[in-house]
Image (cartoon, rainbow, N blue to C red):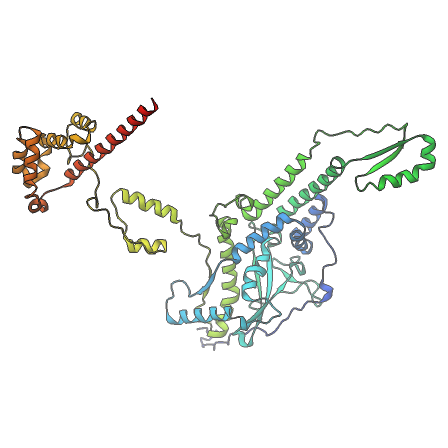
Length: 533
């Protein structure tokens, strides 16, 4: 509540609504009749920038528009940066921390109003165009101004009226003043009716913002480089026709000969007497390579200034991933989006919410989805590393993370969950020398290998309940007796299987299979070697 000096409560004033319709109209005389970028020299660039420092930004703003028309490097980079933002989706959310139904309802109604195409007039830009193109035109000059065309009471946004930056001045203000017929010195802009978006390259005066300043210098040098390159091509890339005649013929036939030379086309030529000595002095740079290097350097520098990187501009993926937004460095992309969000929230949504719902209503906020996509390759690598360390990832959670239905496949029979025991583990304490000898054995000696392992005292304990039966087998006098008694034991194994730890026994079988495989490969190699011999 607000009180007067006597302590009496003052009634709340109704929230003012914006004027309807358009207050700034375009006239044919507003067409640009001069071209400040024509015959651009370092001295002219310096003059334009010094005038802008004093607040007269008309020429600097006009130069910002003209360079996009004359420099293909600037046009490509600026368009890429704008489209990187325009390609993102957006949404209207409740205020941070406010999850009340009223806040959610206001946010949903506001988004529906902004997205509905029927609310816009064909004569003006839509909210989408205003957000991603009109306001983004602040990139070079540092600011952009749009007039909002509101419906009755400010309930609907009927369109956006973009005003070119060259119609503003900072001469007597820190903010842009609109120069009109009635206000030649500039008029202040009404909040809620006009949106002013700033995109400054650094802190300081807004009349010196934007990235036009480094770009106009680079363009000035590049355009002169092109001019020098064209001169070089004309001089060294085309033949030069020379006609030498006697003095008498020169006096009488000079005009006819000159016409003859000109008929050879744009290569150039000349008519001289035979007494004239003509010599063309060539510079060391006869290939023109230095001019191409200058143009390449300028193009890379322009791309760095606008996009923050050069990798994505022409030779592959950028620093933030190989997708539509990767053309712009990720931190620059997010900064552009946050600047647009702040401008929209403070100068459009806040006013519209107050007009429609009252001064105490929760103001919704714009969110542009500029977050980088999750690196699924890195996540898959992490999952694989954890799995190899013995940690399993829940299939449902993994399916949600990767956006696809994942299920665990059953392992082949007899090998589910099997990890061969290493010779150094406590569960498998075979003698190293014996293990090395067994690896060299053939598949036919598998039974002998098992017999020797069973006779090794350190390998008995992992059979647990079978210990007594093992004693019978290990005391067999020879291999034949061992095999016979082992077959007899097979009938009793199923009843005891649930009580025994088979981990090391499985490792034993794995060792036997590996031995057989190695022996088979060795035999095959020996066979091939014998054939070659």
